[in-house]
Length: 237
Image 1 (cartoon, rainbow, N blue to C red):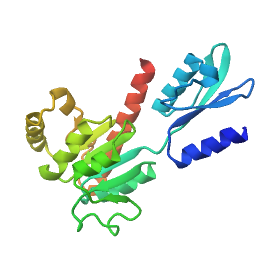
Image 2 (image 1 turned 90 degrees about the vertical axis):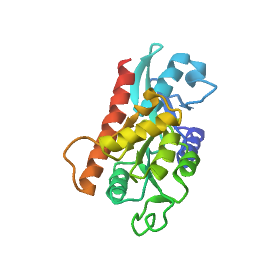
Image 3 (image 1 turned 90 degrees about the horizontal axis):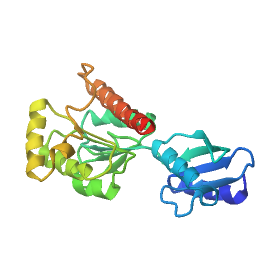
């Protein structure tokens, strides 16, 4: 690898920028491609550029036969993110489990007595009101959003921002009755049925969870299922 490529690669990783390293497996030539690259890989080859962008989106490295050549596209994405609204009991095991699974986790809650380093050691904390905190963190297609407070004053503002974002997963704690009221409020706020249907509620897979840790397992399992199902759907398209 040339020093210039290596330097740029390390800089991109340090800044958590998404990119792909494209390598011609015969010549050894390498170049970096970004989701918003104006110039394509391999001197502007549209086919290779498209493959690299798709690999970044799917977060999957792969060997391609393109333009009569073997091309290896290696993806370098920043960590997946999880934004948790509500520093409640379930958030404690969920934040730890998600961190182990590779997520960059932030807990958003303006209530100082809940949102403390003692309760969430090693987890990023945001003390803003959920809509302000969510806007500042800018959820993208590599972000999962989970609201856990059971309080419309906190959950709803966070959900409204999440529904306007490209977050790949949105889930909200509460019974079916609680969610029915949530749907009414979001509808009154101007959200469509299709937009509201993005919310997984009751949150998590139905595995009979009872304790906070078990509920956290069901939530992380559902997020994992949704993430990979969407990737598989794009690959099949």
